Length: 83
Image 1 (cartoon, rainbow, N blue to C red):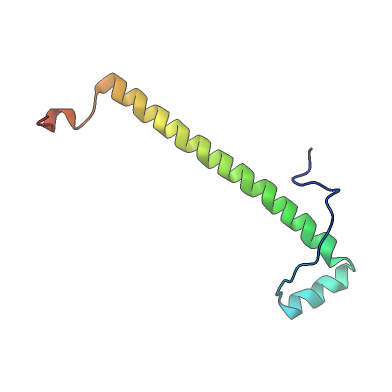
Image 2 (image 1 turned 90 degrees about the horizontal axis):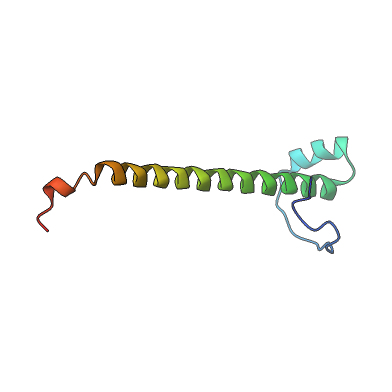
């Protein structure tokens, strides 16, 4: 599977505000907080892109269904229009 980002891109420091207790618990299981956060963010980006693509596809399918209904049955407003 292709990574969600360029793995060779340079790293840069960022500031995060995280719960102290959570950080203490994370430090009990890993010494590399940066790697853990980077991995979690990469997973988030991948899942969010998939969610957005699925949402866009669902919207497109609804538009297609509505257009097909309109072509078959006409507009619901046609019988009420004075134009």
